Length: 369
Image (cartoon, rainbow, N blue to C red; front, side, top):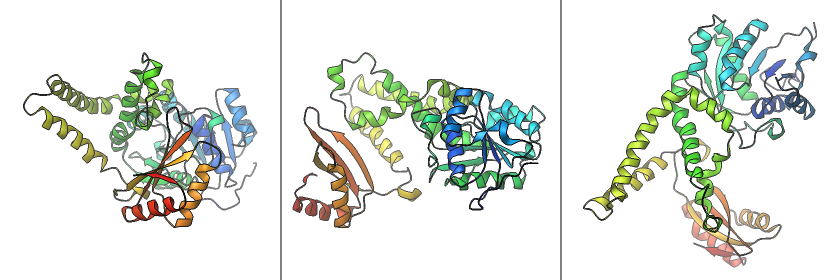
């Protein structure tokens, strides 16, 4: 029997088998290989597997020999995840098997109907990704400081759950634990609904004249950024969590109908109050989003610095802010239409706002409040 050992720096010893070498599967391989944990890869696409091997995410599964994996990670599309998990549980009877699909309750229900050994199975969901897909977009640090949800089923053993936790910890993720139902309800609101709303808004831009789109600023870019996501993947995600998503969409429909009714007669008694309440309700919801490092929300002060659109200017600005001794809480970039000027929007703690403006002005920067 071939032996594979890690350097002892991780929580896993390996070997780890990754079934699926898309963005997430390949990123898992890269992250584990960075901790010297042996990884073996398999993918229905020989090209995807070859790319993942070439960039160092692991070795082909054919090379594992008679070694028994400690863990199998199923990184397959949601609509085939249950079948692949069941196959892995049968093929590797000593291994823990986890999946990383973005829906959990439906997959568990499918597995429960297959008479698989679910003591060794843990549903998980790393809340990380990119707009780009495929192994060439993979990054070993993709999961660093990102949420990774463990969703054990009623039959999951404590040992299997600990192995799944070790995977997330080895990849630098922040681990939490939900039931499959709790997970699907949560991601329907915080992940799936934003994708739907972003795509719906972006679809309205298809026939818009280019001269109108030239007026777009960061607001439109922020809201439509995730509309560039993979349609095939999202068809499966939305279908797999349709029940939870549609309940939220009913509420969105009620809000839209309320807004439409108000705007059809915006000068009617009470119309302006209703509009103000609608925006205020959005303020209240936005304020509940956790702040920096997952802590309570904080109100930050913003300022905008104009920089010449040439190499090195943003790096110089950030260096000088560090010299001033102010910590940045957030940063956004925009460009002035028709001008060779960039705008760097900076947020800081309110008690640092005036000091930073004064110090930047003293250093010759053009600051807008």
